[in-house]
Image (cartoon, rainbow, N blue to C red):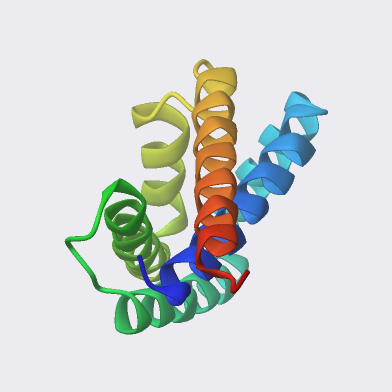
Length: 138
């Protein structure tokens, strides 16, 4: 595994852990924020631009489809981030809101989504840190 994969794994993992923990502390406030974001066209556009930039950075910097589970997961997250950003840019607030809140049942499956994110973050953080320790000179 490359040092870039180890770094991105730790970065994405820690980010996911911190965001998941902040969201799980107050479900109602999180849902209100998400609903507010999805109903505001200007805010949705700004977030879409930022997420597309992050997704492009990940895809251009780490588009590796072999080398172990951690490597492939980082690549998939890059592509999913890019796709999510494009959806934010292309979908109207009404369609985005319907998709995220109704189709994905965000409110009903809130704790499941947060748990998956938290576990993924722990896996990425641990895997990236373990790889970094293995690569460091002794």
